[in-house]
Length: 194
Image 1 (cartoon, rainbow, N blue to C red):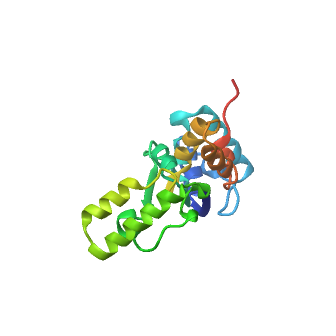
Image 2: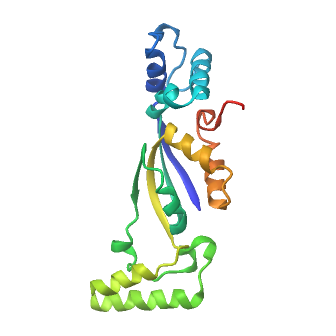
Image 3: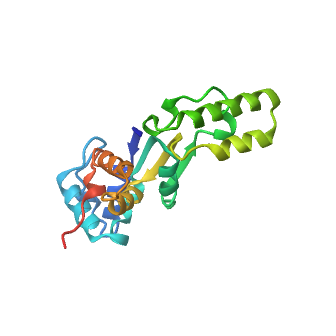
């Protein structure tokens, strides 16, 4: 599993949104590079209050790429609110080259399955029969790696972190550890005690 941060934006709009309820814009002490002390206290209080109180963090957006096995993507697809995805296409690219062990999670694929998949790729290249391509896609093991580009709000990432940080699947643990490294990750990871 590989995760790469592409960009994070929206801290200033989120703070302005947080300050809008009380029209306390004059107390804002943040700039584009750093959240100020007063704004951090306000955000921490709202984040700890949860739910609709921290709706301002929907305006903080992270863009990142993830290369993960198909079985992980099935679970990730549970999260749809505040998340947009674009993925590499198996329909258009699965037949572009022979598959190797590196195309699978931790190289974990039976060599006979790999040989069978590559045989089917060659058959498809010769015949261009859509049924062969569909059959190839059907036979892809769950460990096949697929890269997706994600846009997610900090609120959506906060929900993922909350529900998946102690998940049995090690991929979720890796993903949550990565979330802990994002700029101002406390917005995602901090929860009220008790």
